[in-house]
Amino acid sequence: MTFEQLGLTPTLLKALADSGYTEPTSIQAMAIPEALAGHDLMASAQTGTGKTAAFMLPSLNRICTPSAVRSRGPRVLVLAPTRELATQVADAAKSYGKYIRLSVMTLLGGMSYYKQNQMLAKPIDIMVATPGRLMDQMARGRVDFSRLEVLVLDEADRMLDMGFIDDVRRIAAETPDSRQTLLFSATLDGQIGVLAKQLLKNPKLIQASAITERHEHIEQQLFYSDDYAHKNRMLQHVLRGTELRQAVVFTATKRDADDLAVSLQSEGFSAAALHGDMNQSMRNRTLMNLRRGALKVLVATDVAARGIDVQNISHVINFDLPRDTENYVHRIGRTGRAGASGLAISFVSGKDQNMVRRIERYIGQRIKTHVIPGMEPRKQAVRAGRTEGRGRSSQPNGARPVGKPGFKRHERRPGGASQTGAQSRSQRQNNVVPS
Ligand code: AMP
Image 1 (spheres, protein in one colour):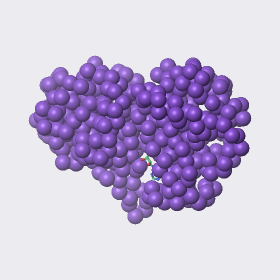
Image 2 (image 1 turned 135 degrees about the horizontal axis):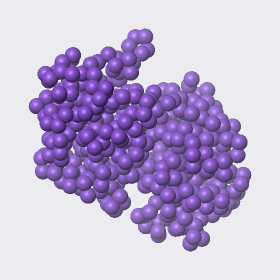
Image 3 (image 1 turned 180 degrees about the horizontal axis):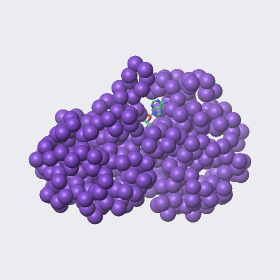
Image 4 (image 1 turned 135 degrees about the vertical axis):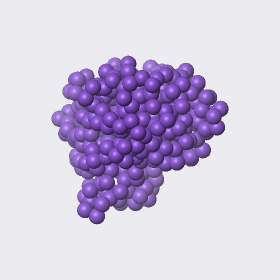
């Protein structure tokens, strides 16, 4: 399948060629023709699948034909749960639409009202907004939806989790009935299904590949820790590994993110925190430093890290496990971007075992336990029936110390099969649990 076959206009194809994309991802191949045909979409896809282009390309294709409605306001509205994700979506729109006359605006909390008001007074092609600030501007009577043709709900499940669901409903109710609605979400059941019934008309159901398949190029590892100091030592060891390019370290709280970033800085790492208590310009600066490689380690909380898309991130480290299974999947998806391989490491203790089991059920696979030679946990990891390796030595059966943590670039075999796929992984007996 090629982008040409999907029916996109030549100006978009040229921009895609500039981006270096050679073929559509599966979600793009499924979603783009349906969206171009004008259907509503209910698509299950997470970050890392190419979902942004899946809704942005057909939306931009529409923008290539001038609007018949002469007024102000957006033709395409994308609602996203966080500022970071919204900024990335707006950047993607600019990049894919670089050969089109295009106005893109973001409407986010923390931004100056003055500039937003100026933009809202004009016609806009693409508006990317977080629900809170958009509701705020709507309440002030500044938003005109009379030109609106497409409403996109990006990461709808997250918007629901974050309590934006009523805002999303209210915003949708203010838009024309004739609109096309494209809903993208990691899950489509439960409340999302209810929302979809309310907002979508005869939607086409699009499902990207299953979670396990989506993350097959991300190797996942567990390390048991005794206490905070032990975790810290293991973290520093991993961060000093030669194969580590850039890492995102997740902590449970904003305070922990700040403390850990400071402690890593004092150990000589170029590290910074990212969380919701930081103002927007600090968050932007930190993300820019991460993108241009000036920052090696980002210490983040869940919400702040959503949508981070930096291809050079080789490691995701769960210093603390997330509170829910979906966040685990979102976290590990910060690595292994655009087909690269990645390593996702979780530091856990005995009290995390229930959560580990829930995660394993959710992702449909076991996560192997590893140790760093010389940093074995003093307490035994009681994980009945799950520890395949029993060796006491540091590296039985080709076990790798984590400085070289089984990290491989995604390599294609002549036959097309991936060397880092599930099969080759199961052949590796590389975990060591001290008894
Ligand atoms: P997303 O799932 O939208 O967050 O996209 C994940 C990453 O995949 C981004 O870095 C995109 O630039 C990249 N990407 C999107 N579509 C393609 C494609 N067809 N080929 C290669 N990379 C892509």
